[in-house]
Length: 146
Image (tube, rainbow, N blue to C red; front, side):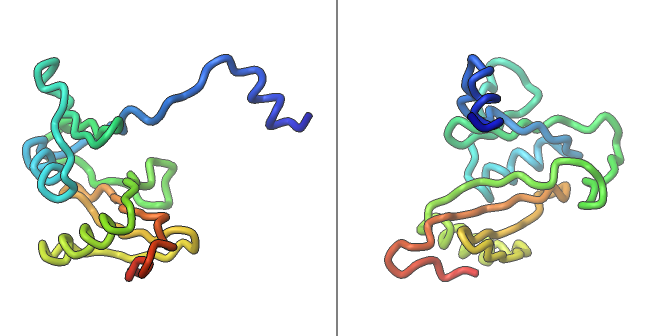
């Protein structure tokens, strides 16, 4: 038995999925609108609490927490141990559609070919890095990006 199998055997539970990623934002209302209007996420659990604002798709949410100061520091870069980005997966058709929508909205994009996946990187209003990715590269016609 290899060490990976031994580690799995010792665990008596199974993680279902990531429930939410919590981020601090400068303006909760602005961020709520951005995650709704740009990424199509829906607000959930509004009746349970005002904050955090839970913006969700499927079983996964982004929890928007208000910064504790009026002028918060921007997100850290790749030279600091931190959350690097939040990635959302799309099918190939959705990937093409979001790319067109981002261009229409004049949102700066960075395209990346990861070999097995294609990604679009954007920043939310507070500078949090968002990845939109697809593994749907072998569908008829493939993805035109990157």
